[in-house]
Image (cartoon, rainbow, N blue to C red; front, side, top):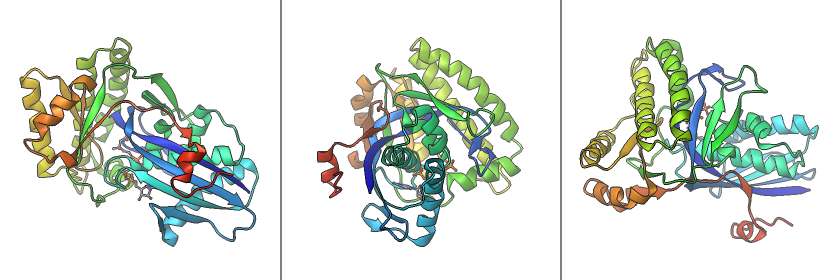
Length: 335
Ligand code: ADP
Ligand code: DP6
């Protein structure tokens, strides 16, 4: 029997990943770049035993349906194949992030699961190689193996489509998350991006501009030019949403409160507070800001949102194993 428990933080893309070149291998159409957050994370425990008679998947204390478990089994198979093992595996995971609400639960989820399997199976893959496995669970999970600013280089094959750490973001930067709506979204990112690739006439323009934005944002990070970083971030998000709105059945993740948050951020900028919005496949708005100004921004946003809807997060670190004490808080025994 072998066990491991690993924590992974979510990441929010500043240059978005939107669209797959290969759906089975999760190869993206464009490279992307994100900031890992310390406030939102997943803890995942895996146990491997030849006494088990099936794979099991528990999420937030609930045993999951056959369909959800089959999705996880498909991912477990990649590791079983790599390790040349065939035992069944029990996965117990807790999200400290709303699930499927556009707050990147799938990113921290598959990064944590990949990390736990790497340990429990004694594979000892380095993080870059491990990121090519995490990618097969959910594209955005590729970037959650590392902390700070992380690039997912699209690469040209399954072996080299991987995450590369860019900068540990150990400077004055953070996010205020506006949880407009924490319920599960109706159109998954997976389906949303597929429809965009297949039917939006704006999609080729998205791919072209994402590659240019990536070069520009890496320069801004290198010289810690926050204003440039923010401008590129906001523009990338809006271009992604523009490409989705051009899909044959337009995809709109915005809700009235999303627009309210965007307008509030514009007002803050007019008042001289530099902050910028980004949005993923859901109505929630993330405000990129100076961490030192995050409290002030949160305070201003309370004119429109309740304090429960507002969360401040600084940059997060890469995956790590839980201490036996941390694991024991979930009733997971690592011995
Ligand atoms: P999000 O915006 O939260 O990333 P997605 O629709 O991209 O939403 O992904 C949500 C899906 O990820 C869930 O439906 C579930 O299948 C999977 N998922 C979420 N949390 C976990 C977890 N802790 N372990 C394994 N899979 C998870
Ligand atoms: C808008 O990684 O959730 O958040 O690869 O199909 O699992 P799959 O999609 P997912 O998509 C993330 C899309 C995004 C942008 C991003 O995180 O880069």
